[in-house]
Each structure stands twice: as C-alpha cells, then as structure tokens.
Amino acid sequence: MQVVDSISNLFRDLDVADATDLSERSNLLYRIARLLKEYAYVYDVAVVVTNHVMDCVDLNAPTTKATIPFPYHTSGRSVMPALGLYWGSSLNLRIFLSRHEASDHLKGPARRLQVLFAPNLPLVKCEFSVDNWGVHA
Image (cartoon, rainbow, N blue to C red; front, side):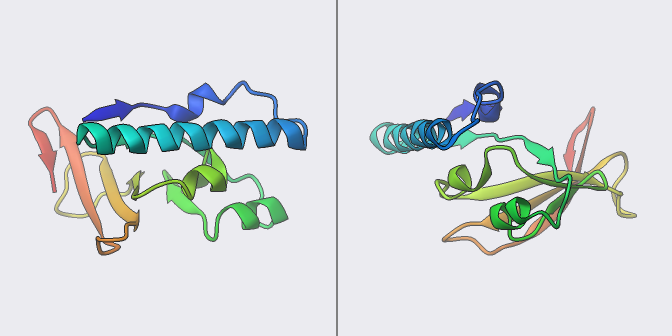
C-alpha cells in the first residue's frame, strides 16, 4: 500500500491568482493522479491519498455551489475538499471521515466513515470510535 498523506499541503502555498496559474495547478494535479493510478496498476498496490477539507465560508456563493453539489459536515461545520472539483473528479473512490456527536452505543469521540463515490460499492456509512483498545463500531 502506498499512502500519500495531506496532498493538499503541497498546493497550499501556490498562488493561483490568474487562469494560467490555475491551469498549471490543474495540470500538475492531473499528472500526479495519473502517475499514482499507473503505479497502483503496475505494482498491484492500493494507493490511498488524503485530502484535507476547508470551511465553506459562504454556501450561497456561486463558486461554492459550482465546486460542491452539497456541503459535507464535520464537527458542526460545513466543509469542502481543499483541492476542489478537479481533484475530486480524478478519484476512483471517495471516502469522507468526520467527527460528530456519539450514538448511544459508542463511547468517546465518534467518527463517521461515509462512502461518497465508488463505482463498485454502495453509498453507505458507519460510525466508529477509536480509543486505547482499538477501533469500535
């Protein structure tokens, strides 16, 4: 398994002030996604890439509505993927991990794993918690 943690950190400081910069960033994201898919195929390994989220400041803004069809929620906040729509359309599978209020059967901070996009999986979710003794669902 190949894990790339926090891929959005690589792009956080890039200035995308104009269309050329945005085009170059999209091109780089495309090349990274293509290479990771190629490595997964050639070496028969799973590739997991994490992408942070950022707060949705204005859910009624045209750019927000164009970027995400609906906001995701974690810790009582509306959030969206940090790398935007282009990176999201390059994925084979999208899983959203979030924090929320615990159900009665879970102890400690609750987490939710939700399949948002998968060509071969149902769009399901499950709650779990993590403590010193492991993961509990």
